[in-house]
Length: 245
Image (cartoon, rainbow, N blue to C red; front, side):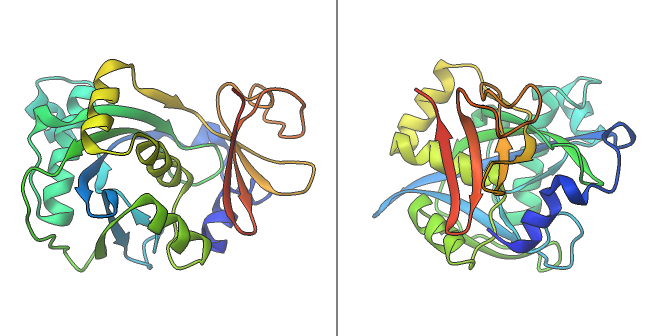
């Protein structure tokens, strides 16, 4: 977690009304492998000079363009079919790795909360590393790569050595709970994708909170409301996830 990321989500710092920011379609690949210490995910570090999540560690991904939709045989750039092609293309462009389009399994769909000057509707796909290959980044948009266990990523995030956006952090937590690549893929195949439309607020302690559907405060965007919990709290010692049974 970083101060840069917290300021970007603070509702008090909103510069652009939500109605004036057009959503852009995007896609990302949560590429996984089973390592000696448990499940590992590929993370890429974005160029610190980039305006959107500069310096953050992210899964490979980017915008869905018209060519992705054309390859998918659809005119809908926001749909899952075009997003699959975009995710596969971005994996090759950013990490020089190949994942067959048909092997990408929908995991979740995130919509950037109001506030930032850029907002995305992003499909997250999970996939297994097809074969052992070296990751090669372009040195321009992407500056570094690492295969990490969720536990290692969380520790580095808490130590402020790795900037993770809430969707990245929460996705790592979800795959960690399942424990293996096969379990993640089986789970993804057996259910509909998770849907997230975060609303950003502050709780009674003043901590920044990402509210998700199912939280008592989500309908109004008020993190101080009593009731069911489904939220990510930006605590001093790192993120803290709360969800009611």
